[in-house]
Each structure stands twice: as C-alpha cells, then as structure tokens.
Length: 465
Image (cartoon, rainbow, N blue to C red; front, side, top):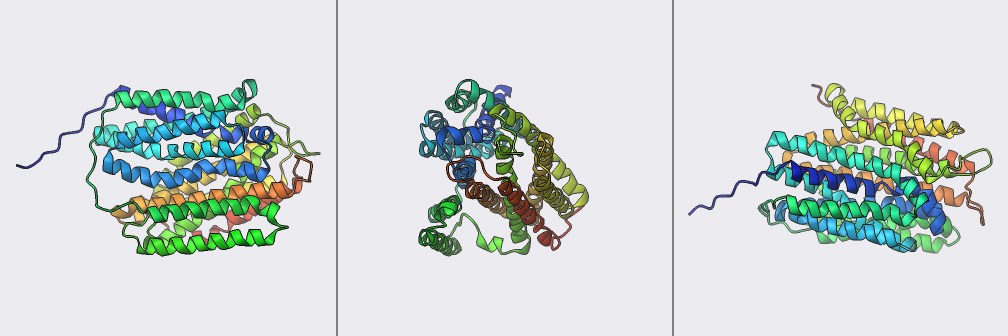
C-alpha cells in the first residue's frame, strides 16, 4: 500500500505574528552591543581589541550554526529545531545579562549567536505551511520585523544601560525572546521532517573551521600585546596555518563537506568570495571605529557621546542598510551585478577616505557611516544574487554559505584590526587613543575596499532584465 504524505497544516495570522514577534525580539537582542560598546569597555575594563572581539563573536558563532540549522531543519522539521535553537539563544541572553566580567559575557554572546540560524528556520516553517504566494509575504514580514527589531535595540540599549544597568539591556530583550518562543511553540504546528539525503554532518570540518576563526581572532586581538613576545605570536600563526591546512585536507575528502572547495575553485565563485571578503573587511573597520570615535574624548577630536547618543547617531546607518537590500536587488536586475558592486565599492572607499580627512563634526561621521552601510548592503546583496543565479540550483545553499563565511572572515579581520590599531595607539595608563589611529584605520579600510575594484573588472556584467 502506497504511503501518502499528509498535507501541511495551514497556519494562521496568529502563528505568523508569533514568528514576527520572535524576529523582532531577536533583532533587538542582537543589536544591543554596537551602540553600547564603549560603555561596556569602560565597565568591564576592556581594551579596544577586546571590545572588537566582543562585537564580532556573535556573528562568528552564527556563521558556524546557520548551515547546520538549515540542514537539521530540512531533516527533522523547522519548528522542532527552531525551538531548540531559541532555547540556546535564551540561555545566552541570560548569561550575558548576569555576566560579571568579559569571559562570561563572551560565553553569553557565543550562545546568542545561535539566533543567526533562527531566521532561515523561520522561512522553512513558513514555506512548509503556506502556499507560495502567501509564504513570500510572510517571509517578507518576518525579515522586516527582524530589521526593525535591530533598530529598536540600537535605540533603546543606550537609555536602558544608562538608566538601569548594562545587565538590563540584555535581560529585557531576552525576556521578550522567551515569551515569543513560547508563543511560537504554542501556535505554530509542527512541520513534517523532510527526507534525509543520507549525508552526515561534516563535524571535523566544522570543528576545524571553528578553530581557524577562533585562532584568527586571538592572533589579531593579542598582536599589540605580543609584539614584544614574537615566539608566542609566531606559535599562534603556525597553529593557524596548521588548522587551515588540516581543514582543506578534510574538506577535500569529506563525502558531504561543509564548504565545497571544488565549487570555490570556479572563477565566478572565488571572485564573489574575494569581493565579499575585501568589502566586508574594509567596511567593518568603520563599523568598529565610528562608535569609538563618537565616544572618544581626545584633544580636538571625539565627541564624548554617551550610549544613548551613539544609538541615535548610528540609526541613519541602520536605515540605509535596510534600504540597501531592495535597492541592490533592483539595481542588479536593471544594470547587472558588476555595475552595482563597482558603484558600491567606489562609494564605500570614498566615504572611508573622507572620514580619514574630515571627522570634526558629528554629521561627518553620521553621513559617512550611512553611506558606508548603504554601499556595503548594495555590494553584499548583489554578490548573493549573482552567486545564487550563477550556480546549479542544487548548489545554491553551498554557494551562499561560501559568501557567508567570506563575510564573517571579513568582519573578523576588519573589526579586530580596528581594535588592534586603537590598542596600539593608546598610551599606557590612558584610555584615549591617538587621533592618528583613527585616521590610519580609515585610510587602510578605504585602500582595502578600493582594492576590490581589481576584482570587479574581471566580473561578468550579469544579466539585465
């Protein structure tokens, strides 16, 4: 007797609303560190390099968790994995809220990084329970609320931290995440597990990639302090090289590799990854340096802004990043990916160099940061779109995963490099970095971003519609 699959249970507006609330609350929890980073550095006695580490560790965890979450969601059901993932996020939020020192706060952020995998799991749940037309609307609503939550978190984190404490700025959105997770668990029907493709999880590749990212962060974070201890720094560099070599060997032999290196060898693929790495490396330095400069109290530079003010100053950049997604998609269709990426690179590089030359007024940084965020969003959107359409349909997930890893590597190196520059330029016994460190950082970021033009020249123009 032939087994027939039961049709999916149609979900209502309440269930989609619960997913939206979950996206809103997780977006708020994700964004609280950026505007309050200078405050956290003072309260926890962090160096700029340690602050940079705190600002990127959540993203690194997310890059490792997301491909696993998607694979487990397809195999065992989206809702089942989503609820378990959110339990980890809630635990991370509580750890961050109660953290007495930097190591515990880093642990909390590592656990919170699981939230990056929640969004694609939400999409799996929606696709499995709604017709194609309605699922597109629902996915758009969930995505928009996640971005909206990020803006809300950016605006409220400063006032909460200053009026109550840094503990509450993590606790309040975590409480909202817990409530939204309970609502999703109650209102969302369980989607049936998909068929297993028989391929196992590439655990050795995942562990080695984790080791690479962690070692890379340590090398960049400790470099200013290890300059007088070249043997220690050399040992870390050798360890990093060994991990990379081992990871390449494992991925080439794995039956179902986490990162398909054969796909990476294709010209269109490695060019997209190289562009993403260079652009994100350059722009992420500005993501770190601009809030620090808002907070700085140097002689003739810096503005001594509090966490609340910094959140408002960064809001236009968040709005620009939100608009960049649809604008990048429209531009890619009309002009081709190469034109969009080239324009984005030029705008970002010019803005970074302009910030190096002119940063004496608040509006200089606000406008510069907004232009950089817009340009970065345009470039990343065009890269994701062109990559997804230039590979076989069966390789779409792997190809976009390569872009994600390149993006994370760019943010890791850029953020940590910015932190290392400020740490090296801060005199002993002082908490004020020299203005030259900011100028140098913006110039380096502009040069790295501009170097992406060497790759864009070799790209295909893309298909115009």
